[in-house]
Structure formats: structure tokens, C-alpha cells
Amino acid sequence: MFDIASGELLLVALVALLVIGPKDLPRVLRHVGQWVGKARRMASHFRSGIDEMVRQSELEELEKKWAAENERIMREHPPVREYDSLPPPEVAADPADNSPPKAEPQP
Figure (tube, rainbow, N blue to C red):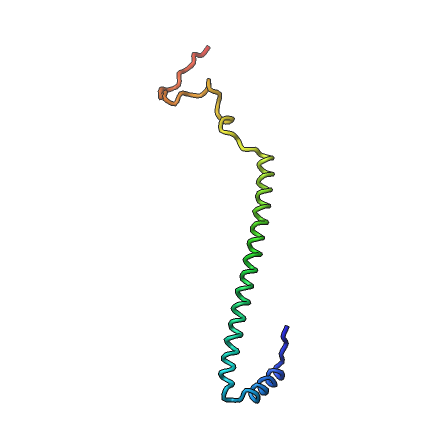
């Protein structure tokens, strides 16, 4: 964006030295450095805020895709209900009965 060659930078330094003077130049450069640092921190903060918003929108999009995929899977493979997997009541053993099973007479 700002393409400054070394010759142009040298010209700006000479003009600053002539206009500001050698006595006040360090104070002015320190002040300019503080402003540049402040601007960089603000840009970094802004960039991190934008990155966080992008991350959040990507997460929301992925959550929507996962919810749709989960819904499709649940439609194709419905969950097994607990009472469907139990044996019929006449076959089920009494949990209080701890006696061994009775042998049936063989023909």
C-alpha cells in the first residue's frame, strides 16, 4: 500500500531535520512512535474482532450442518425404544426369584 523506497525515506528525514530541528527531533520522533504504536494496537484489536466474528459465523454454519445431518441420520435409523428390545412378559424371569430354572420333562 505504502511503498516507500530508502531514497524517499532519506528525503523525509532530511526535511524533518530541517523543519523541526535537531534539538526537538527526538521528542517528535518519540511522539510519532507512540501514535504509530497506538494505531497498530487499534488495528490489531479490530482485526482480532473481525476474526472472532468470522469464527463464530463458521461455527454457527457448522452447527446447522451437523443438526441437519443428525436429523437425516435419525430419520433413516430411528432409535430403538427400550420396550421394543425387552422380551414378552410371559418369557421374562421374575427378578425376585433366585432359584435355578426348572427343567422341563423330556419326551
